[in-house]
Every structure is written in C-alpha cells, then in structure tokens.
Image 1: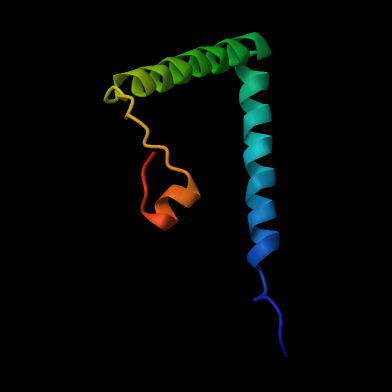
Image 2: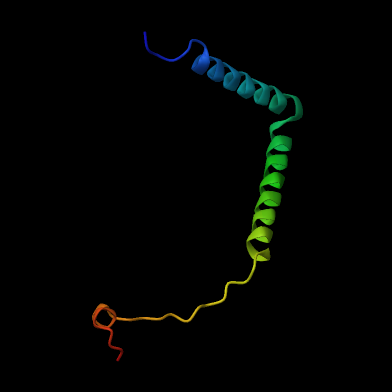
Length: 79
C-alpha cells in the first residue's frame, strides 16, 4: 500500500492553526495598534539591513567588452 505516512500533513496544519490562534491571542492582549507598529518597525529595520548589505558589497567595475562577429572568429580574420 503506497501513500504518505499517517500524521504528516495534518500535524503540520494543526500546528499552523495553533500558531494563528496564538497570534490572535497576542493581538487581543496587547492591542492591534501595538502589534502593527511593532511589525512596521521590524519591516523598516529589515529593509535597512537589506540596503546596507546591498551597498556594502564590492564595487562592480565595468569590463571592456570584446565583440567579434561569428564570421571573423570562424575564418580567423580580424577586421
């Protein structure tokens, strides 16, 4: 008999449902405005860290492009 092992996907769905319920309890306890402001602050901090990582990398230097036509490469001649 083939199939998935018993308890895999339903257990994950159950834990996700519990996580959503926990989040709802936290929002109810501290207030929606507080939760939204904390999430907004985390979003701003995350965006700032991403921009710092993007700009802190090594500078890209342009490389001189060598363009040859196919006929020049095949015949071995250069214009």
